[in-house]
Length: 405
Image (cartoon, rainbow, N blue to C red; front, side, top):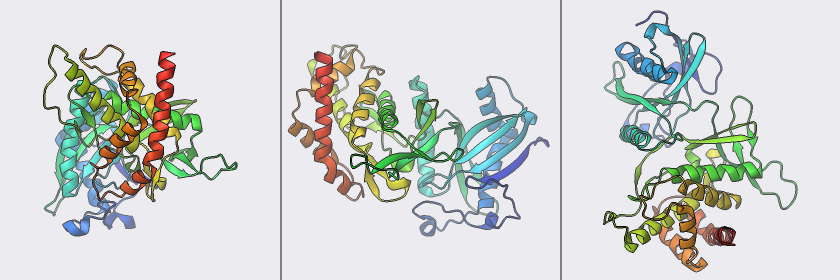
């Protein structure tokens, strides 16, 4: 082990170093927001967590972290060039306990994320997610999801327990966001809810209406960019309440990233692979699947928990316009293997224009009926679905008229 490398440990909410002398060091970490540790009989202290992360980074003479730094800098880095590694325990998610890894190379800080899974459920997810991220990064040229570097397991000393981990890209200066109560509402026409961005450095702030529109547009665009129009594979499930998307807003320029991909699979079964002769049936099937993808996206993106942890809430109406805008923009980026023209967005608008408002409502109800009947979001969705379809239909009509007249 290179003697020069120093390790320091932090909690995300604290600015000071914690160690064996700190009270929290020997306390158990909450293994899940649902407190699964009681059912599984698992007990892991903060100290054990930090040492496990350190062991992962030190393993094989710092192989994983030096390889990641070398890729990031596009130059070969040796272990003894790492002066310091700071490990920040960011939060306790439903499946993972992510740490921000801050490395110091010649005075420059380079950041990574290390996802750690302790529960049996989390371990099942983490291996699959590593493989999915690897697949998507290899098959798509987009950079909306994290790069991944290495994975492995670390056994906690004196315990018959392994922690599964993988090292990935940290999106610097990106922050989580959630629906919150509008504290600055003045006029009756002002929305009672707004999007708040959790900026731990500069302080939380609300997005303007234009920024909110752009946020929902970028979310929809990202998910559409990774949609496979031929196999119907898509990123799902995802949820705003889980903080799956993060944003960076600097000088009126917004960037959005997706930090986790739990599954990549088709919602609909494609029983027949598309023939090379591009039959009408192939085209219809592709457009039908695309419509289901879009409608499901339009519903799911309106869901969140108030301030990320409170009651389930339904977004402001501006999300509908933003979602359609982003979806159509994403369509222009994907390949349809020449099954339709090179303007899939226009073709989709032509296709969906044949549906009445009643048709869309029936289809949305059919989609919602496939959701888990025990999901807490269901009552919120059903209560707002008709109004949602009304707004969606109006946006589609405007888009059709704009493209054709």
